[in-house]
Amino acid sequence: MEFSIFTIVLLCLAFFVAGFIDSIAGGGGLITLPSLLFAGIPPQFALGTNKLASTFGTGTAVFNFVRSKKVNWKVIAFGIAFSLGGSFIGSQTVMIFNQEIVGKIIVFMLPLGVVAVLIPRKGIISGIELTRKDLLLKIPLICLIIGFYDGFFGPGTGSFLTLSFFFFTRMKLIDATANAKVFNLMSNVGGLTAFILGSKVLFLLAIPIAVANMAGNFLGSRLAIKRGEGVIRVFLIFAFVMLLVSLVWKYYF
Image (cartoon, rainbow, N blue to C red):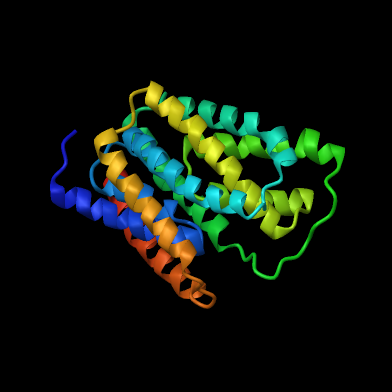
């Protein structure tokens, strides 16, 4: 597929803004994936191309968490294979469907990402020792199910992982967030591998938008914004609604 310079620039701008928002309030995928669809990219190629860009963007956040020693490698060891495997299977599954059907599925599932992003997390405090049941059953099951979701669709995966770890294993919120980022990166890698094997990644487009997404993540995480999250969430939802209305019109009418 060929794209005009104007289209590439607009997509880079969208991915930069999404990365900036994602690093502060989460939910950047609610802008990136619809933007690719709106640009006329077939759904499965949009999923694969978005997966490459989000892999690099998530990797930026993981680097910060690892450097600050917030990642529990014991937890990672029990769930990493399930995140990779679940996402790989999810991506393989979505490639079975017809492109038009995939477009409708994506539009139908986008509100799920909004739910994950909007659930309040500020002020939530937890944190108890993880049990054997947590390590051997809950964490692998959470990683497998949400890994499949990430491979099949994507937006909201980090939020779903964070909330699942917090509510089902009672991790501290900061620990749940850090571990979720690592698992999100692993599920991105698993899904990306499937999309690359299925030749569903537009590399010439994916590389510049990945760089833009990383830049947005980097700048957003460097800015110590303490009171701007509410405004950013309003902007995110406004942009999402505009894109969603356009996509509903495209795939359902």
